[in-house]
Amino acid sequence: MGRTSKDKRDIFYRLAKEQGWRARSAFKLLQVDEEFHILDGVQRAVDLCAAPGSWSQVLSRRLVENCPDGQTKPKIVAVDLQAMAPLAGVVQLQGDITKEATANEIIGEFEGEKADLVVCDGAPDVTGQHDADEFAQAQLLLAALNITTHVLRPGGNFVAKIFRGKDITLLYSQLRIFFTSVTCAKPRSSRNSSIEAFIVCQNYTPPEGYVPSMANPLLDLDYDALGVNALTGPARFIVPFVACGDLSGWDADQTYALDLDTYQRLDPVQPPTMPPYKSAVERKRGGNTGEARERL
Ligand SMILES: C[S@@+](CC[C@H](N)C(=O)[O-])C[C@H]1O[C@@H](n2cnc3c(N)ncnc32)[C@H](O)[C@@H]1O
Image (cartoon, rainbow, N blue to C red; front, top):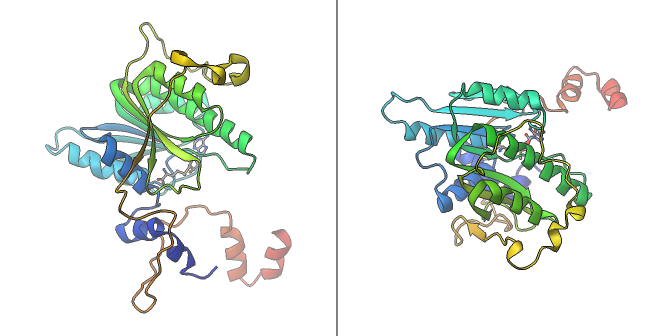
């Protein structure tokens, strides 16, 4: 692949570099916000599965705007399995959100205060086996929801990536227990060819007497045994599906030609901190190409 081919192919990849975002994902959160205003007034937020950090960048820019008096300090806690390059004003934790220890660390960061917003753009490494990928994604989302029940204030919002697979009805039903409004959003910057979408859960209202538990009671349910997909009539909750972002604007599935006479290729805003190819590149630079090839 040539140095410019990715830039030609993906308009949001190119725009992200031009506008200083670490990843094209920034536009997904911005477009969800355009439609749902989930960042309005937010002063404390959790960014789950945050690396390389473009959602944290969006949060930090907006949360600073939301605290103009300088008295109240915005608080952003970002978590990922991967190390993330530092971002001013963002507390970073490295860990697995499905593990209790990580969840407790996040909860501890808030010292009893509550967050206004929890976002989760988590995605497991996709295997290509759709059922397995959807299951892993759903487990990640439920781990995020579990953490959310501990840190989100009543009335707060939760936004998370989902894969719209065959078992999605159960997820919708579980989310509706905790939020009065649940909508499935597809930002313009998310490719149509991807089953990815974002679930926008508004107005956190846990059932009366609900006590959050880190025992993960939401996980490991047998969807088929529960018969949730067979629900019909009023028992089946149909989640509204909303496209967001300027529908006459850039299209993630379209190819935009570059004017190569004037085009300037930009470096990534934040190069990967620990890319798996790093050691191979170092060995090659050191002239040890034979050994590098052997080990690879
Ligand atoms: C699409 S990326 C997130 C991009 C990010 N929102 C941004 O704007 O830069 C998905 C992230 O999910 C993280 N992830 C996957 N499983 C995780 C887990 N169990 N715990 C924490 N992070 C996880 C991956 O390490 C990856 O960085």
